[in-house]
Image 1 (spheres, rainbow, N blue to C red):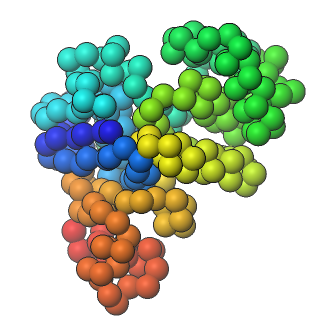
Image 2 (cartoon, rainbow, N blue to C red):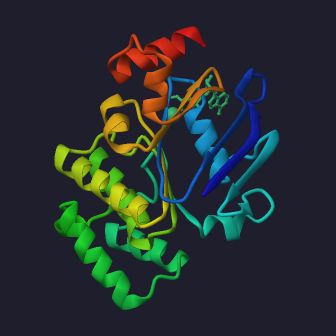
Length: 241
Ligand SMILES: Nc1ncnc2c1ncn2[C@@H]1O[C@H](COP(=O)(O)OP(=O)(O)OP(=O)(O)O)[C@@H](O)[C@H]1O
Ligand SMILES: [Mg+2]
């Protein structure tokens, strides 16, 4: 569960990037975070995951305050950031073992998950190469695999499908669905409205740092009966906000 309560963020010399947002994502839910470029999605995700501190408000992950107890809160979630260019000098397998050490995943379970996921994401042959030599999509996949191997209860993903081939994107969506159906929480940002439409239990739409809609697509459709597609709904909500 993720509870975001009256959270705001002001960057130095900037207007409010995130302006008094409140959203609760329950156990068992996949929530899509959508909104135009610069709307505040990545800033919100950085605050949820303790990369940035909010100027106002509070964020709880499974009841743990990310500002007050950052290490404890961080054990509850896995993050796929929007930039996957990290730990470039490590080999893929070294990165996965490093992440698994952090989350205290034991040896045999770790080995089994690495083998399964490497196969699912077609990364088996690349695990002994340095991440520096990986393509954009491969870097994205190794970061995703790091989260999936540790399997924390809350997954937070910033545009996770960007750069993935159709097969890997399909596998990831399948894993996200499975994770939520086991009673866990998935929160992800995307610009691909069809993904949000097919995968999400609810969507949060952000524009100019404010949440302009949060709820199910059925609720959104009922509010705008003239719109038939999510694209039309999105444009309507964003333009009227
Ligand atoms: N480090 C920073 N310093 C100053 N302003 C920033 C910084 N990062 C983001 N911003 C500003 O905050 C606002 C929100 O940016 P953010 O990256 O959260 O948007 P986003 O919704 O993730 O956009 P995108 O869809 O393009 O990824 C923008 O106006 C952006 O210019
Ligand atoms: Mg972003």
